[in-house]
Image 1 (cartoon, one colour):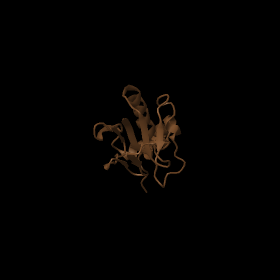
Image 2 (tube, helix red, strand yellow):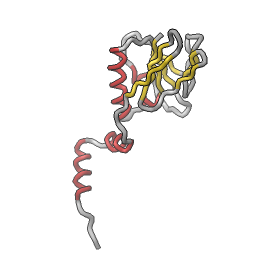
Image 3 (cartoon, one colour):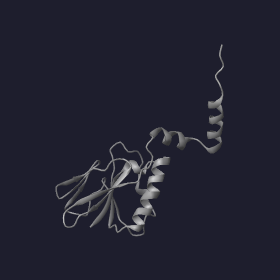
Image 4 (tube, helix red, strand yellow):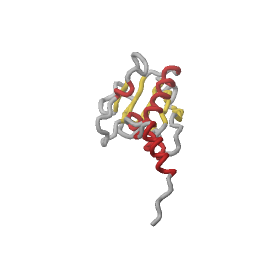
Length: 144
């Protein structure tokens, strides 16, 4: 079985996550995948698999908030356990796991942003607001 696994932080409604999800959609469309597994943290508020709708028709998505239909797998809020092998993805990545013959994972890096401040700056401002802020920053401060 071929699985894509990640944490629910990828489903947040912010610019960086939207970009990573777009890359994930392209990856899943071009790669053999049997299921998507998502760990949902206890502090998540209103995060749903809705941000993954349309990823690929008929591809099952399983959340850690529900039991898995696979006997050898346990999905927790921060990890996936397959036959005693524990997988923990890092933010900005997904794990592509092949369970045959033994569980092995390949880390797929989908987050190309290295600066967290860019995410906050970019996600909250429109193009006009960015221009206005840039002009304000170029002004010299008044001296008393």
